[in-house]
Structure formats: structure tokens, C-alpha cells
Image 1 (cartoon, rainbow, N blue to C red):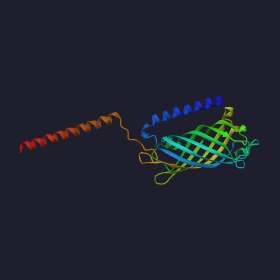
Image 2 (tube, helix red, strand yellow):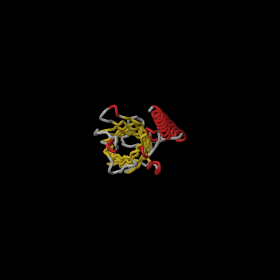
Image 3 (cartoon, one colour):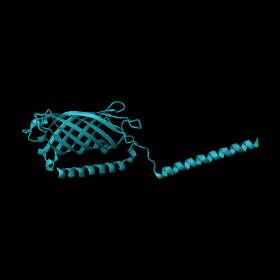
Image 4 (tube, helix red, strand yellow):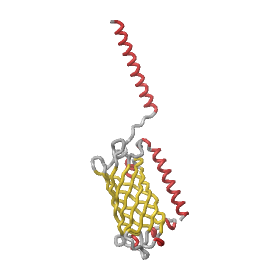
Length: 250
């Protein structure tokens, strides 16, 4: 377990380094306040072993919630947690508990639509690639039998944004979740999860519920603006001098 934790910790550090790199490269989209571009949501669907089982017959219910933070038009983070309902009954050693596992993950999200077509504002439909790591705990009637392991998740989010302000989102989420107990990505240790999510996007300090492009200036533009301001100051000085001359002539 210690070695697994070290591996997952390294991967999380790499994800955080990627966050900083993406944010620095896309500063023209960043809002100035940390509470901008947040969303919360719920999801529900089914989960089934990826191989050696009937996908539909052996599917079990999964429900959960998520909190998201969009850092740039192409990159965001999501913290999610799901509850598995009677998922252990698929296996011979399964649990008799109704809710028999809890799974929490930190996911990185890449907006493939904006990466491919460029960002022109919030679209009605977009699709994302997701990847991240988490921890899953399985509960049994006897706490002594409980077990836990680290996980890795990868998949897609097919997102729809609704309403005039794009405040409401619906998503279809086909994901694969790997059990990293063996420290390898093996199909026999993976589950297929398909959920439908609904999310609410909060209003940001710019008045929008999505990222807007900031107006950036390069140094020549700044110099040109300074020159225009200086010209206006000289015009005002000349006007004041002319007014004083006319007053003196009266």
C-alpha cells in the first residue's frame, strides 16, 4: 500500500505541475478571483466489470457528486465521489451491504473541442477527455474484511450547456476505472462506468458563467497609448493657455 501511495502521489504532483503550466500559458483567459468558474453537480448511472462479465446483466447502480473548477478554456479540474450500490454482488466474495463502496477521485479535464477548433466562447456541445487518480474503499458486514486501494480513471465527458446564460449543464460520462492494487493497468482489474450528470455553473466576477477572453496589450500598444495620453495633456495645456491669454486681453 505504501508503494502504491508513492506512485499515485507522484502522478498527482505531475498533474498539479501540468495545471501550473497550462495556467501560465493561458493567462489571457484567467479570471482574477479564485472563486470564478466553479460548478457543482450530481451524477447517476451504472458500473460493471470491464471483462469476464456481462456488461448489462452485471451492471450495478452508482450515484455521486462532483465539484469542478475551470482554469482555462481547455483545462479544468474536478473532484468527484461516487457510491456503489450492491456492486460487490457481482463477485463471489461480494458484500451484502446495500452501499458497499465509496470512490473519490481528482480528475484533470481537457476540452478537446476547444483544443481542436479554438475557443470562441461557450458552445452548446463540447467533449472532454478526463484522466486522474483516486481511492476506493469497499465495505463488508464485518469491518475486519474491509479493503481499500488506489484507482486511476480515464474516459470522456460529452457535455451540453443549456439556457441563455449557459448556467445548466448535462453530461454523458463513459469512464474506465482501474484498480491499481497490482500496480498495473489491467483489463481484469478495471470497471466500465457510465453515468449521466447534471451541473450548475456559478456566475463569475465578470458576470458570465464561463471564461471570457481578456484584452491583452503588448509593449508597442502601451507606448502608443501613452503617446496619445501625452498629446491630450498638451492639448489641454494649450487650451488653458489660450483661455488665460483671452482673459488677459479683455
